[in-house]
Image 1 (tube, helix red, strand yellow):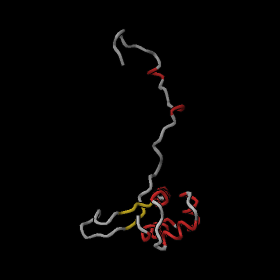
Image 2: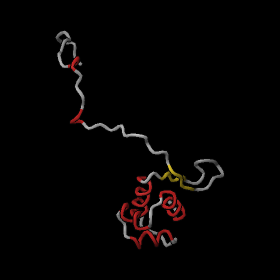
Image 3: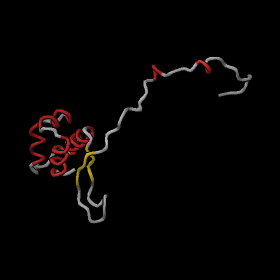
Amino acid sequence: MSPDQCRAGRALSKLSENDLAVRARVDLKTLQDFEAGHGASPDSISALRLGLEAAGIVLIDAGSASPTGGEGARLGKMAQRSVDTIEKEVVQYPEFLNNDAPPGAGG
C-alpha cells in the first residue's frame, strides 16, 4: 500500500487520521509520517491496510484492474447481512431428532 492509497482510502471511508490510527492500533504520528511519504515499518503498513479493509476499502495494485491502470482505492460493496452462524444456536429440526435409519447406515 502506498501513502496515496492510504490517504484515498481514508477519504473514501470518511475516517479521520485518528480514527484509522486507532483502528489499526498504530501511533498517530506513524500514520501521519507514512501519508507524508516518510515510510513506515512493514507491520505498521499492514495494520493500516487491514484497518482500511475493515472499513470497506478495496486497495487496487498497479496493473491489476487493467494493464495500464495505476494503483488505487475504492469502496467495496458491503454485505447486506451476515451469513455467519453461532454454533451454539444451530437449529435442530424436529424431523431429524429421531434416528430412523437402519443400523449400520452411517452418516
